[in-house]
Length: 132
Image (cartoon, rainbow, N blue to C red; front, side, top):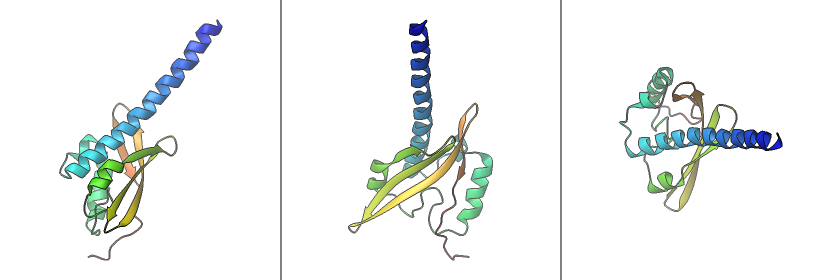
């Protein structure tokens, strides 16, 4: 009985970690793909409502809503990490070094855990441009 209970607890722990890792891998895969080609099909990774929100917000920004930057550097691609914040919220972290200055990026986002993983929200950028 104790062996069976131990096996069940161990299995839950392992499969729970795999699920978490799957979500983190999904988010990292999206950011790496997007940073390499910002013309990827966002609907493979995001909900329609989030895509609409980004398209609307992008009209007033002079940087990418998704990456919070104008350009992508090798440092950004090499340093991407995903951290779980709560049940459905994660944070994408990376940095960029330009002219010996380091900029750190921390981007909270929310995923759905339905039949297919989708990013359903990305926290709005704090710094918005005055472009019209």
